[in-house]
Amino acid sequence: MAKSSVDDTHVEIPCPQCAYNNKQTIDWICDHRELACSGCGVVVAVDRGAFRKAIEGVRQRLNEARYRITAR
Ligand SMILES: [Zn+2]
Image (cartoon, protein in one colour):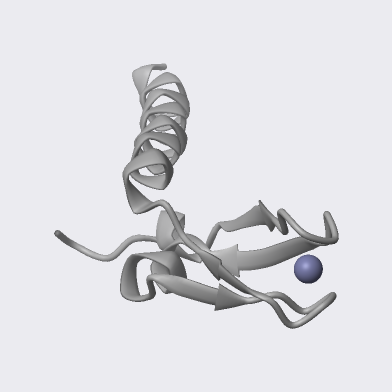
């Protein structure tokens, strides 16, 4: 898949233990399965299935926005 600026979009990964919102780029999440929480240090398993859906949602919104911009 071609890289795009969408992959630099930050998403928040809330820690299940301390509720700290860890910010990571979509690109980073695609390359990692686990995240060490910046708040408490616990290792959080990243559910990429769920994230992929979220990422697709973001991509789709951006594509729609782009379409609206170029349609005029
Ligand atoms: Zn934490």
